[in-house]
Structure formats: structure tokens, C-alpha cells
Image (tube, rainbow, N blue to C red; front, side, top):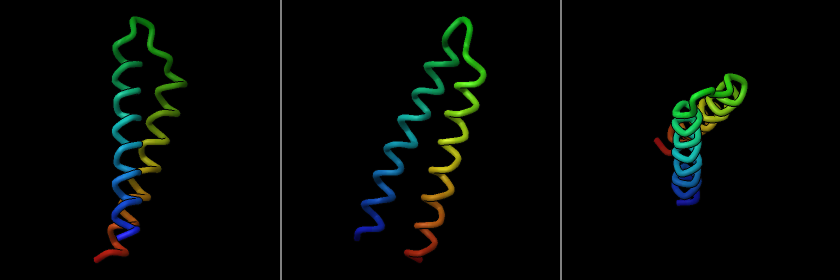
Length: 57
């Protein structure tokens, strides 16, 4: 049960990062460095969620 809660928490953070990426992309002069960092963080969360899901199954 704790793993599932952690996965949900990470999923929420993952979605927040996606929203931040979309916000940055909608700006006239998107900050490429910020975009790269947000995408890196998002990928790290995705990898962590996948690892936790493997532990459940």
C-alpha cells in the first residue's frame, strides 16, 4: 500500500512538471535551460515510478 501511495505522489509531481513544461513552451521566449532541467526531472520521476511498479508486480 505504501508503494502505491508513493507512486501516486510521484505521478502528481510528474504531472506538475508536465504543466510547468507546457507553461514554459507557451512563452514567447522559452528558456531552453529551464526546459531541459524540467524534462530531466520529469524523466527521473518516471523512471522511479516504473521501478516502484516493478516491485509491486
